[in-house]
Image (cartoon, rainbow, N blue to C red; front, side, top):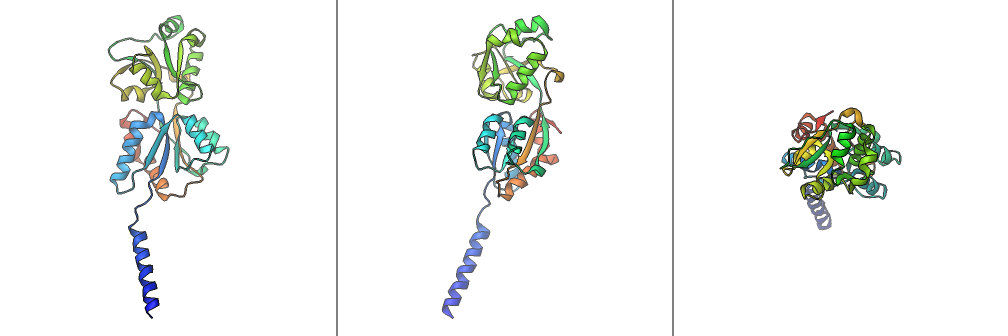
Length: 251
C-alpha cells in the first residue's frame, strides 16, 4: 500500500513539474536586415505570455548553409526566395508553412552629414558611384545580388566594379559607410532607416532588380510548437504591422 502511495505521489509531482516547466524558446534564423524589426516582433510575442524567441541574424546565404549543415532551428526567414528555394530543394522546410510576407527597396546611402543625390543613370551615375570605394554586400548575399543586378541593368557595373568593397552582409555594408570607410553603399531602405549616420542618396527603380521579398518557413527538423506559433504571429496583421513600422512593406 505504501509503495503504491509513494508511486502515485511521485507521478503527481512529475506531472506538476511538467506543467510548471516553461516552454522552450523557438530559435529563428533571420536575415541580417531584419535585426531591429524581428527583435521587436520577438518582444511582442513574449509580451503575449510566450517564451521570447532566440533570433540569430546573418546573411541569408550563411544561414541557409548552416541549415544544410544540420543546424538546429525552428524558423528560417530569408531576404530572398533563392536561398529558401535552396533548402526547400533539400527537403529541409515544411513546404506548406512557406509564406512570403515582406518586401523592401534597394537604395544608395551616403554619410548623413552630406546631402548628395545620385544621378538617375548612365555615365553620370557611373562617375558618382566610382568617386570612391562603393560598399556592397557579397554577391552570394541577397543584397549584393540585387545590387549587382541593378548596376548591370543600369549599364554601369563595368565602370563601378573596380571600386566595389565587398562586405559579409548588408549590415556590414552599412557599417562601412557609417565608419567612413566608403563614401557610398548599396543597402536596403530599411537598413538606411535604422541608422542615424547615413542618409539615402538614391533609390533604385524596382525594374532594375528582382522583387525584394522575405519568405518565412518552419524547418522540417523543428519539433517546437512555439516555433509554429511565432511563425503565425509574424504573418498576422499585428505581426506585419511591426515590420511596416520599420519600413518594410507587407505582402
